[in-house]
Length: 336
Image 1: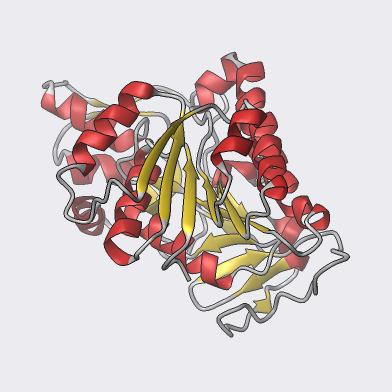
Image 2: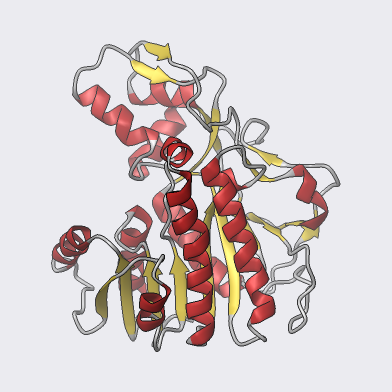
């Protein structure tokens, strides 16, 4: 569905944006690929890296300096765009706790600007990236992403069927900027005496960057509008991650950081009556009725059929049936 189409990625110079752009160029013949971000240095560095990419075409790839807080600039950037992937966000949990208004401006007001620009330019499909921290949020970042998720779901009621909006929610991305894997790698390389562990019982969902990209691409084909897509992915114990990365190296418990959870949730218990299970993913269906589309999402655009989960069940990193062992974590991280 992407051949001959024009795609825009907000936050396109981040870890996800770079991998997503690279995958698009390798697999599809795009009409245009727009990288929308606010950091000119990252755009320059990304362009220099793509000059060495075998699939790079300067007539296809375009870089737009802009901030999702600026609705006017977004409207300019989305002219002639068919598909938008909204990846821009402020996402560091402790930073958001100390700078709440800045996080709100980007994650909530920015989401509203993306929606308004997409509607004005009649963009066909919009997918917004979310996080497991948006499910039963206890921190400011998660709360802003939950609000953003709600905005994108509700946008389908404003679109009149012309544009479709959906959300993709997943867990920790292995090796992404600001995550624990690069931190551990740096500490190991610097000859640290120990690895810091926030809590010995802490668990996290685990997904590679490429798996996240592929899931979003598949959801573009599945989406009908209003879905929150959740992949079935493994969990890890953080203590096992430390063992996998530095066998025999001591760990030290430093305490849970501001806004952190012991375990993460992607499909909350309170949404179980709205949650459909498919072979390799879940879909949280809208709690509101859309006036312009059919609300029955049990069969998606690919013909995959889902069934409602048991009332009261939840998808939790601590009770996930699929946990990676130490050797599996090592192999997983190597693939990332």
